[in-house]
Amino acid sequence: MKTLRILLFSALLAPASYASQIVNPAASGGSVNTGSANAAAYYASSGTALSGSSVLQVFTSSVTVSTAAVTNLNNQIMAYRKPNVKYGTSTMLQVETGNNGTAGSSIIIFPDGSVYTESQTALLQATATVVANWGNGSQKAGIRPTETLTNNSWYNAYVIKSTATANTTDYVLVESTYQPTQANFSTLNTIFCGGGSNCWEYLAAWPYGDNSGTPNAFLTCVQNGFRTQCYNIATGNARNCPGMRVATNSSAANAQWSYATGVAIGTNVPVGFTMGLFTVGSSNSSTNAYTIQDNVNNAFISSGVELAGAGGMMSTVECPLINGIQITGPSASPYDIFLRGWTDKSLSGGNPQL
Image (cartoon, rainbow, N blue to C red):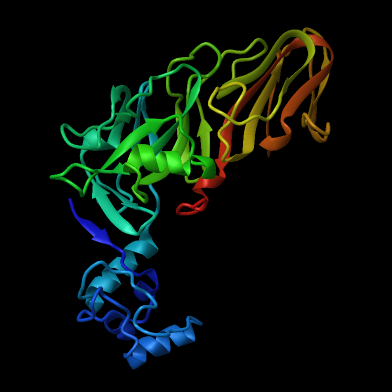
């Protein structure tokens, strides 16, 4: 495995003629070389004032940065795409490989700019019945230590830098119910970094259970960056639909789901979710006009007519999660609401909440 460190992002984006002069290899602590006319010109043109060699003390030891190394690292940044999480089995999630152009390996750029490449299956595939270990001993992906697999729960997939004494170049996929919120950053730094920082990167939230007929399995979903959509089939009172059942009614005039954040599937969604892709279903023996609205302002989202003898209807809509959703008909009838996809703002950039 190879670990590279992005020492100074602005230096990497500088023209090649400046790159070798921005860093002074001979300076104590690797200070910025303010005596270089090219370096000074570059920073002046970028609007960054220089006032001595202590302006940017970013290195812990003297280093030599060649133009070729800077160009190579700059190319990695420009070509980088955070890997998706992929469904493996009912109890296993895995990191997508090939995002660096090499089959079987996966690259991660952590918040401190360090670049890790991993190819070991045992570290890229997390089985939720296995306790993860990223420290000394036998390293393996899995569920975070002290957590147990719980039915109908949201699990978050993180990659964690290895802290093993003899191996600090690997990373490990870990599943946890802790969400990547500002309020949780201190806790995440404690449980993943031992009180340090910049050792973890959030990749995805994944449903374990459909709050219906299959409460104890990771759902078959596909992630594409900040959007994920599920294609499992969950059981409903009116219709069986993809996703997780979040509301159902067997004999009432409506079904509704109210927005709440948390871990429990059915009542909660992760705090980073902003948009939801819902499928609503109804089943009525007679012609039935229905309306889909939000659950706060009764704002109109969609409507339709279920024809008598049609065997029920399904309608898929996308709307903001924060106001919830409801389906209403003219009379008591089975209704269901399923969440089958979502947009996660926590994944709209490298790590935008930091």
